[in-house]
Length: 75
Image 1 (spheres, rainbow, N blue to C red):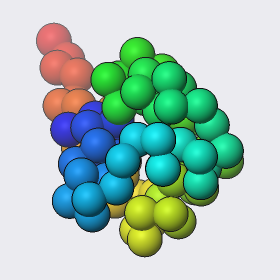
Image 2: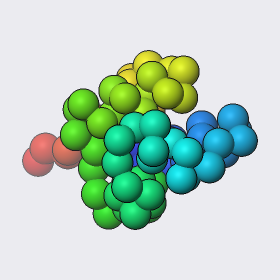
Image 3: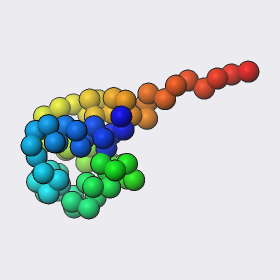
Image 4: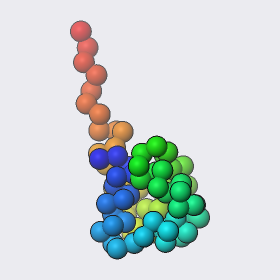
C-alpha cells in the first residue's frame, strides 16, 4: 500500500472525513485527496501532522509504501 492508501484506510477506519482531517492538518481537502490518490506526496511536516491526528506513527503510514519495493536484480 502507498502512503496515501494507508492514510485513507486509517482515516476511514476512524470514521473521519477528508474535510475534517484536512482542516486539522492545515491543508486543503483537495490536497488531501491528491495525497490519498497518490498523485502528491505530503511534506514531512504534513505527514507528521496527519499521523498525529490519526493517532499513529509516520512509520505506520509509510509501511508498504515506496520503501517496500523489491530489490533490484543484478546480472
